[in-house]
Structure formats: C-alpha cells, structure tokens
Image (cartoon, rainbow, N blue to C red):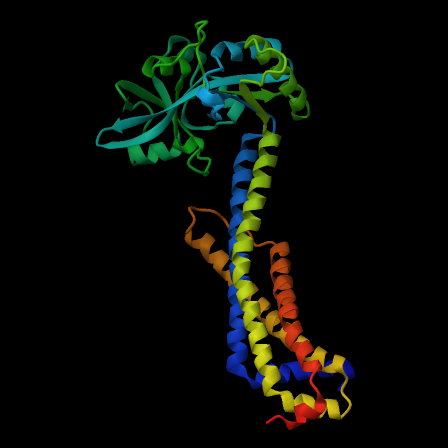
Length: 414
C-alpha cells in the first residue's frame, strides 16, 4: 500500500470498527448540512420568485409614491402615508418630462365584492387606460378599460384570474354584474394570469379612476387637486431611466414648492433600484437562514470532538505501540485528524443528498405557497466545506492530544 494512503486506510478502519458510534456522529453532520441546504434553498427560491415577478413588469418602469407623514414630536410615519401626489402631478409629468411613453396614476382600496352567493374582499384599483400599457397587462376575455369609460366615469371593471375563479366559479364573467360596496359594476374583461403572489393583478379588480373617485371618497389637497396613491411611468429607453428620475424629481419639487434643503415629500425609484434593494435584502435573509441552520452543524462538530476524544482514550495503547515502533507525532496527529475529516465529509455528502431531497419535496408539495426552492452549486460547496472545516476544527484538539502522548505511559494503559 502506498505510504500516503496509509493514514486514510487507518482512518477508515477506525470509523468502520465502531459502526454505531460513527453512524451517530455522521448523523449529526447530516442533519446540520441538510438543514443548511434546505433553508438556504428556500431563501434562494423566494428571492428568485420575487425578482421574476418584478422583472415580468419590465425593466423600463419608474414608481412614484407619496412620502411619509410627520407626526407631533418629529416622528415620521411610513412611506406612502402622506397625501402629496396628485392627478395633476401625473398630467404635468406626461406633458413636461421627455423620454416617457406612458404615465399611469392609480388609487386602491379594499372592498367587499359580491356576486350572487359568492363574495370576497378584493383590492379595487382605480386606473387610467394607460395602466395596461405601463404594466403589460394582457386580456384573455372581453376588453380593457377604454378612454371613453374613463372620461364618463363608467362603472365597469376588469378582473384578475383569481377573482374570476372565486366569484364566478366557471360561469362566463364578461357582462355579469358585481356589487362592490354600495355600487353595481359590470365586468367587461378578465386579465391573463400572472401566477404570482397576492400582490399581483390576479387578485385585483380594476375600474376607471374617475369611477373610483365616485365610489370611494377621495381626498383633495388644499389647492383642490385630486390625491392619488401612486404614479407609474414607462420610459422610452431603460438607459434613460436615471435621467427621467432626476427630471421628475425636479418637476415635483417645484410643483410641491419644496425649498432647497427640504426633503422630498415623495419617493421615486426605478425598477432596477427596486430589484437591487430586494436582491440585497433577500440575500441577507438567506444568509441568516443558513447561519441559523449552521448551529446544528456546530452541535454536530462538538459531537465529533467528543467521539474523537473517546477514541483517543480507547486507542491509547495502540498509539503507544505505534510511537515505540517509530511513528512520528505528525503521523499520529494526521491519523486522527483525517478520521475526523472523513466522518464529516461522509456526513456532508449524505447531508447534501438529504437536503436536496427535502428542498425538492418542499417545492413539489407546495408547502410554502408555491415557492420553488433553488439548490445552487455554491450552497452545496459551502455546506460540505463548512462540514469538513468543522470536522478539522473540532478534531484538531483530540488529534493533537493523541500525538503528545508519552509512549511509555501509553504502553502501560489498559
């Protein structure tokens, strides 16, 4: 046998000789590695789902929302809590800012919607006809809201696919009437399913913004302008998004009469900025999930140290014989260190397979509401590397302790 294979063979013999003990040690590593892989795959999957939903909207969008209200004592509320954006702001942006192909102001409210014996609480959003172009909404049945519907404040609606399933249950919805709060609205179209989360158009009912202003009391500014909750812009070229953001910021600050040095009373972000911010946040959460799961790996590493210390005690006489026959300290040290690394490496490989299977099961069974888990190569490499590293770290002291044994005292051991 080649000399460099001897430590590996000796380590394997030590592991195989004590099957149950080795199995329990490996089991701790398996649990830790599989937990790391499954939890990090959930984080990666959630990130991919969120980013794909955002990318589906297009890379040429800019979102404007109101700023935060300021309460007594200088305490600020959440962004969007102020009433600083108006329909007139949207009109001014469309007329004065170049490189914009469409401007879509909107207002939303949660309303109880009833059709026959079926009912649900849905988000009702008042929009302009340009909203379809801006958000890339496709119609599968009927038509979208027209300019004529908007101008006359028609009480008509375009519904999402989930709303259709819940309220109409297989009945053709186009032409049907819905009671929305105190108003009766006629369905004129159904949107193509986006297959995304609850914030998607699948769960929304769209009505003309002018009709929304009649159905739900809408606030006005002190100048009499109509307040809106958001304004979405579609730029002609995504490379010009940054310039459009600057131009819109200057225009809105001027319209809102904000003095130099005063913070904006609105928030404006391009789709790229939103994607980057979400990506950073989800990456942090994924690492946090991995760190939590790694605690079980740490516990497994402590188990490795415990088993290796026991192994040193049991094999004291063997160590003494080997040293008496000329084995060097590094030979003894290497033997036990390789044995610890072998235990954790085997546990790491089995843990990868177990974690991969658990991730697949989570996606297949839809345990997390349809999130598709993602097991990437970097997660696998990280999990196995950490497992082996823990084995080496926690195996170092027992290995060092074994190499320092006095051969005469070791030979006297029972």
